[in-house]
Amino acid sequence: MIGKCICGQVQFKLKGKTPNLYQCHCKLCRKQGGSASNTATIVDLTSFSWISSEDKITYYKKDSGFSSNFCSSCGSPVPNKLRDSDYQWIPAGLLDGDDKLLIVAHIYTDSKADWAEIPVSGMHYKTMPDLEEFLEVLQSGTD
Ligand SMILES: [Zn+2]
Ligand SMILES: [Zn+2]
Image (cartoon, rainbow, N blue to C red; front, side):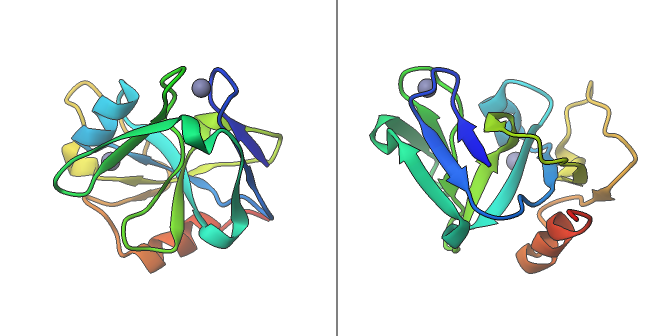
């Protein structure tokens, strides 16, 4: 599956089956995406590759380690490596392709905006679940 930012300069490729999606309702993701939550998936670094314009990426990093990476031409959020891991965070809206993906989990549900409604379907986690367990949840139901 291929992913691109709005202007199309930053492009990347995911090899193999794309894991299912989750929404993060934390305050940082709300600000980064400008909406109630962001929708993303997480892939192993070995199945991720940049196609073009990795050098167009700018980032803003908080002291906590949270990093907002974006295309310096169009402002789209772009993939970034999950801190201290071998995994890459992928913003779902960038993906072009017809793999059938589902939102299977909601995280940081305790931090959601007062005006946001979280669907009842899928797994709900009040904060960040254990990463290994979470990756299994994202893999489930992809075939
Ligand atoms: Zn762009
Ligand atoms: Zn978040």
